[in-house]
Image (tube, rainbow, N blue to C red; front, side, top):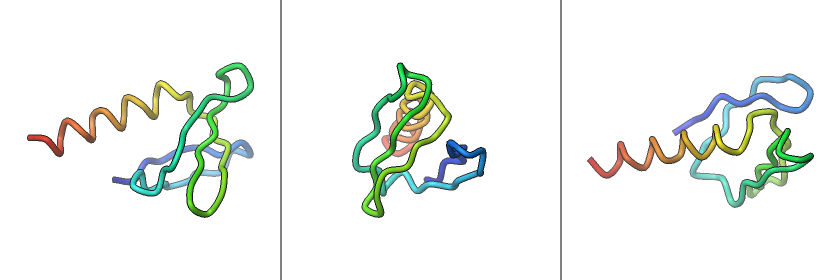
Length: 63
């Protein structure tokens, strides 16, 4: 599953969720850091947004 996210510099990113290693909030929950095998990426979407998308994906796979 690919998520459309926004980089810290307002660029659209398409990230494969299977490549996420760790996601965590930064800057007092204003930004989210996603660690991937290629390295860290700072995105503007909040952690809760990514978590909800991942939970939705997991629910679809279990059906």
